[in-house]
Length: 101
Length: 141
Image (cartoon, rainbow over all chains, first blue to last red; front, side):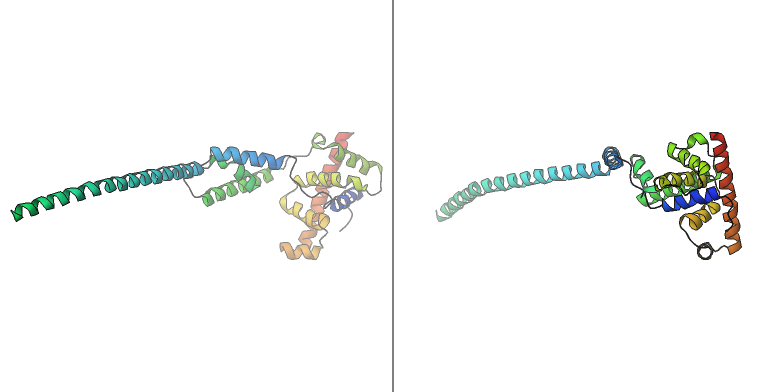
């Protein structure tokens, strides 16, 4: 390779030596900006996280309501069981009395 | 670069299309823009250079000695500037030959070009770089 220009040669040699002197690093505050952008973008992005959050809240609400309703139903059944048993016993004894007469 | 762009455009993602398609679209657009900008190749002006790069040019003009170690980064920046005005193939050959220190045989193997083509491209690239350097020096004076 013939020397076209010694100046250029010197420049290229110096540039070649400076190749590893400065590894490419992110500018100051870049990571902070990226995190801030991610947070800002997350709020108004595709709404996927919002949707998931809403679904989770709705599912929790449904679980709580269903549990409360089941518990209430169970208690009602409990209350109904005793009087009805008594009523059946009374009716049974009345019928037996009528037959015995 | 593509991932940074993707990150910046994240709020624009509607969710109507799969993420992979959206990312590939960004990648394609970024590459097309890069190719477009490659075609422009604006001339380098003296005003575009940093103080350190100007100091390197002055140093080259006044002294026949090798550049000082503290000028290496600036000279690297200056070479990057000069390379930006070259065609991609010329830029590649200068990078491989002078900055990475590869031999013509290695470049021949890597690129598939003939040895003569590598030499011709390197010669032309150097000539263009020399002209750019002279023009910038003349602007300075």
